[in-house]
Every structure is written in structure tokens, then in C-alpha cells.
Image (tube, rainbow, N blue to C red):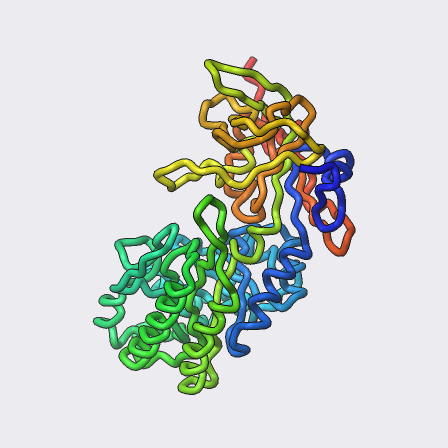
Length: 422
């Protein structure tokens, strides 16, 4: 805990003074290191797609694309974000279980590959493509009959809104013939997220590639694209460890190499979101008040779960804290347990419970929630109590760049319409 705490070579105190709090700061060097650390080791046939849902800021997307990442998007705004960030159409894929007519039409007009998640959606794609006198490029998302353990959030192998059940596809050998305005060109499966065990990722990948081959033969679908999902995790909590990327690549590459030998023209795709950006972010909040209540210490800060819902541990049975520390000064005080809370009128607005911080924590101190580069403000109720979005800053090559302005009263009210009821 030092006054010299830096992000990308810039002192946090300088960033806070310049941009205020609450503030998200992303280290561009960390993002680049995460991308290159895997890209340099992974089999060259594998294309790395950035999942914008993890952090859809346009500058984050542009930085990753400059490094070589493609883009996986799940909404019209994410599609336009990727396009404006410079990602070409042949490097974008659109997935999601509830695509609108408008989103599908936009993809058809731009020749974006669609990852289809239901037979009803496939019929709609076929109909819309016919109306545009075009042929849709469609990858079928499969919900496999198998499940793999080790995921923080299971997304396949169980009843899910995602994908088409493997058994349903197996019983539909005429699927391509029934949709004349669609070119079925491959398969995708995404088994889960937050995998922290190399063996599980390898098992997932192996079984998905085998599944794609079986279904391709059964349905007569050429394997132009096989997307093995991803779900590579980030260690947040005590007892967890980050993936060893060298070990992972050593185990994965023979699997990819064998498939590539059998299908040299297939585009192999891996989707990565949290893994690429999670380590890079710090959510900085300033303590406004300190108090004691029934023997527990509370630090009430200017930001909380309204900006960082992930820190609450939604979906976890046991509440655990993201790594947190004092950013703005040294302290020789002994550590004490603090509950770090935000400004919302709910007891759930606690971003850290029993966090060890200096006993002399005081108003004006800046506390940082680390590993906060993924699923931050866009996955949080930022409009609750009308506090709005925090500012976001990307530090790249030693230069802090404002990449999202902070909401103010005018921006918060701009979309609302006042009627006179007198």
C-alpha cells in the first residue's frame, strides 16, 4: 500500500486527481500481455476472438483488435462497436439466444457470420435471407449431451436456452435442405465460464472437436468454422490460481494440431473475454465516511455495487471478496477487517465484507478493487439511485486516456420525457 501504486506506470493518485472517483482504470500493457501470452503459445491455426460482453468499451476493443483479436458480439450495439473499432466483417461473429429481426438483418446485410441457437431462429434467418436475396452464413450452436465439471457457470450439457440440443440435431439430417437461403458452415459449443483447470479446458476442447466432426458427417455440414468456446478463467479468490498458459498450450496444441491435419481448411475459433481483460482493471473508490456499527467497521465509499455487481458474487453460494487494497498512501497501521460499502440505500451495496485494510482507514482514502477489467459497469445497475456510469480510463504506453465520460445530471435525464400534468 504505497503512494507509488501505479497503473501502467501512472500513479493512482495522479489518475484520481485528474479523473475523480469512482473510476475504472484499465492497464493496456496488461491486456496486451494477456493476449500475447496466449497468442504466442497457441497453435497458429486457432483464431482468438474477443467477447465484447466482458468489456464492450470501444477503445478496449480497438486495442485488442490492434493486437490481432477478432470480435464476438451479442447485440447490435456490440456489432457497431466492433465495426467502428476497425474489425472487418469476416472477423466478426454474432451469437446470443434472443436475436431480433433487426439484428439478424444487420448481420445479413454486412455478411456477418451468425451463430444460431434454436431451430426457430434458423427458420427466421432463412426467411429474412430470402427477403434480402442473400445467403446467410450460419454456425450452429450445439448444446452437447455431455457436461464437463470445473466451470464457474455451466452453459452447456444441461437444459439451457443456449444452443440446439445435440440429439435434436442428430435427428435432423435434412436440416440444410430445409433452409435453402442458409449455408450451414460449422458448429460452436460453449460449455461454461471461469475454468481454472487446464485439464478441463483440454477435455472440453477435445470433446467439442469430436462432436463437430460427428455432426458434420451426419448433417452434411462442411466444417468451415469450428468454435470451441473458451471460458478461460481469472483467479479472484483465496485458494484459486490463475491458469498456467504454458501448460495449457502444451496440452491443447496437440489436440488442435490433430484436428487441423484432418481439416486443414477449417477456421478454428476460441472465444476469450474475461481472460483477456479481467486482470487489467482497477475499480477505484474514495472513502467518504468511516464508522463502527455493533462492533464492525464500515468504510462508506462513493461507489459500490452500482458499478461493480460482479464483486458481490452473484451466482455464488458463498460470498467472497475480490482482491482489494489501499491505493493512495502508505500505512503502518495494523490490518483490520472492514466492510466496504457504496452509496446505495440497500444493505446489499457491500463490495467487500471483512476486507483486511489498515485500521487507520479514513475519509479521503482511495480503495481499489483489483482484477476488475471484466463485467464491471455494463454488468451492474449503474442507474440505481441515478448515480450513473463512472468514468473509465485506459492507460496505454504510459498515457492515460479517458475512454468513457462520467455520467452527470444532464446526461442521466437526457433520455427522459417530462409531461405537464397540471
